[in-house]
Image: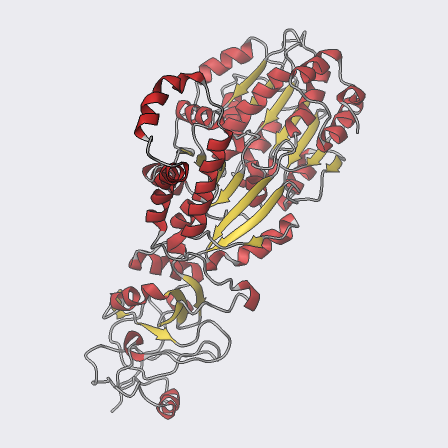
Length: 617
């Protein structure tokens, strides 16, 4: 294995490397550093988060710039403030023996005037976020017209965040003959496009396979009902007493809510998201690095600056919208040669994404069940026993021993141990003794179309003709029923009607809401379909899932006669129930509910040009 001395770095950099305790270069460093030192070439480097990419471009840039000059010679663009500050601090550590080196961080949320002053003093290297950099260029506060080296760090994330135009504008102010080094964890089409546009015949190095997860991280998923997501998170935390984790949520709102709930539940947690001031973010990260915070709940953007080697677990409370982002998340753990675990809490509506992620990261997920209360109690008890067993005693407690011994003089060793550990045991036992099993059956083995018996599938008499696609209908149902993101799933929109699923526990709420419900003057009716999402036809129950006759509803012969009714006529109103029925809708061959139809009055749902039906005479 090569050493840093063999890579060709100068004495000042080697001394700094020794001080930091680096012994051998990582794979990306061993490949990139010699190339960048010996050639003036553009470079595309693909490597996972936590593999030492900053040093891979930082050492060559420090080696090549003229420290005696006050001209800005290097520009490094990064997606977030945290990552910008992290890179700046690392470059300063690498160049601690390079007298006269000035590396300046430019990012939003801090004084632009102060940053401009630091640049004016002579910054050989600028590390910047695209938005603030573009702002300073437009105000003529920086001059990058003479830079020799530009770095696009975490290029995929910058493009995901919508910085393409900003990057284009910034690079238009730089010389054409500069060297551009692009570092990224993944290589989506957008990154390839930016490489083709801004780089000339770049060399490409890849550590592992493109988009592949590091081998130090194992991947697990836990299938739960959407409403049990937070309870599942708590159990995973309780089942790992020494957990030191980052928990990922999609939105700032969810991040703050989950962190607040964890704190209220007695966990040491904190939130990291874009609505925090820079001072607040610094305090949170300081507490996390010092392990005063055990679980850091973060958005994908805010977490890009997290550089902590001891993270044991990454928990995906929600999967990211962009599947490639999972690679970045899992890269927060398993760093610096250590192992880590990436957990995914997934609902049935998200389960299909697991296979997609497996294809991208080229790793298999292990399905695990959420730990039971008994398992958690045992884990916590043994964790306490191990801590007590390994605790080093000091003389400070000696003065209290006499009083303690008097208190337990008549207590045997066995009884004393039982009393001592019962304090912890009873706490978890009492909390979990009546807890339910949160894990649900994995639908992957039977294909995505197979749905658990715990679900209810519904028919609704609106479809594409009414202006709905699956997303609009899902949003409509979530808003009207006040349900969560994952509570409505398996939405299947047909031409003039649709189907959707919820957990069976929500059935009564759904049916009650759509009793005599009107939207824009038209009755919108929801009924239970006997088809659970499989191919082929199925029946639906009249009256919102309640069979109207004591015999269980009409026979199939009646259903067939109903199917043969003319499409331009309304069915008769059924009077054996006090509830209003449905306007008859067209049916497709698949997912076709059968049963008695009844009329609805009112105008079309959203200006549909559906022909009116004449009444029966």
